[in-house]
Length: 128
Image (cartoon, rainbow, N blue to C red; front, side, top):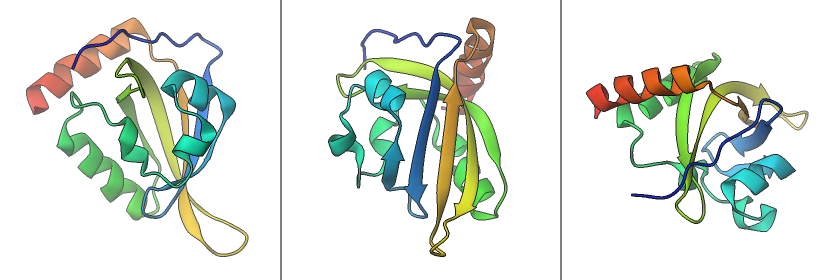
């Protein structure tokens, strides 16, 4: 998969919320802009529509195992965009329970440094 890298700036802050199965319930404007999807295209879709093929399965297995235990997961993620471009983020994913009792997850993502991205690439290459 080729495509150009979308670079986040230091003020970028991407937020999304999913239900407990990973279907998108909310995405902020910055998420839509960077991912190249409209909000209507994202709502109700599985969050993994953004999954880049370079990301190892083990990374997502660890993510799900962690958040399903009610713990916070943090790590570097390479996502693909609607037009097959890509971007790197440092993600923090929180389990949450809404006021109506429904459970889900909140993901907050920010820029990753070039050094952090390089280290993540090296690690993920060994995992793939």
